[in-house]
Amino acid sequence: MLNQRAWLGRTLEEFLIGQSTAPRLAKVDGRIVRITARDYYRYRIGALSELIAKHAGEATSLLELGAGYGANLFSLSLDRHWTKLRGFDIAPNGIEAGRQIASHFKLDDRVSFDRIDLTDAGDPRFSELAGGTVFTYFCIEQIPYAVESVIENIARAKPARVVNIEPGVDMLNLSQPRDLASRVYIRSMDYQTRLFKLLDTLDAQGRIRVLARERMGFAPTLHNDGLLYAWEPR
Image (cartoon, rainbow, N blue to C red; front, top):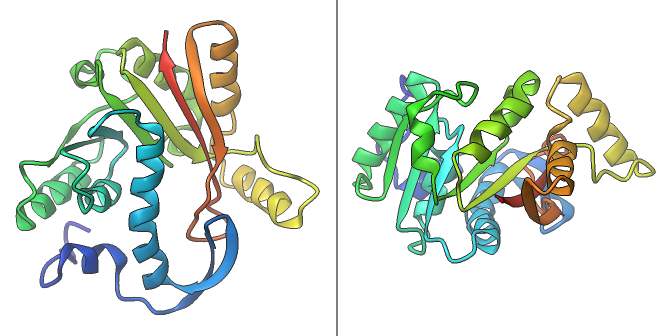
C-alpha cells in the first residue's frame, strides 16, 4: 500500500471502493448476493459506520486496534458523526501509509495513527485506551496464540467500551452447508477460535459485562463471515 500510493489522483471514496467491477458472492444485509467488488465496498462504507454507531453508545471518537493503513477509519471518516479516529498497529509501513493518506485528504485533524504491540502489557500506548471506545476488525484473528493476554491487556487499560469484530465459529449453524464450510475455512487458516468463549467466561466471572452478541450482516466473501461482541470492563 505504501509503495503503490493508490490514493493519489482519486477521491477518498474512490480510493476506498477500488476500481474492480468483478462480480463476487458477498453478504449484504444478511443475505448472500452477487455484487461487483466496487458496489460491495461502496455499500460497506455506510454499513460499517451504522454498525459501529449501534454499539458505540454516545461516543463520537473511536480507537481501532490493528488498524493497518486505516481502511476502516477512512471509511468511518466519511461520516461526520465521527469527530476523532485513531488507529494503532504494529507494522511501520501501515502506520506511515495511514499518515500519508490522512495528510493527502486533509484529515490530519480527525484521523491519526501510532504504534502499539497488543501482546506487550507494558506498551505505553495502552494508556490511550482509558475511557475510550475501542474496536477491532479481524485483528485478533492474526494472533491466535495470544488471545488471552491481548484481551487482558485491553481490559486492564480500562476503555469505556470494546467492540470486537472477528471470525468465529460460535454462532455458526452447522446444519447449513455454508456455515459448515466457514467453520472448516476458519480452522484451516489457524484463525483464533477462542475469543468469544473467553469473553463469555470473563462475563460469567464478573470481570467484564457483555453488552451485545451478534452475527455480522455483511462480508466481502463467503469466507469472511464475522461475529461481533460489544463489552465493557467492570
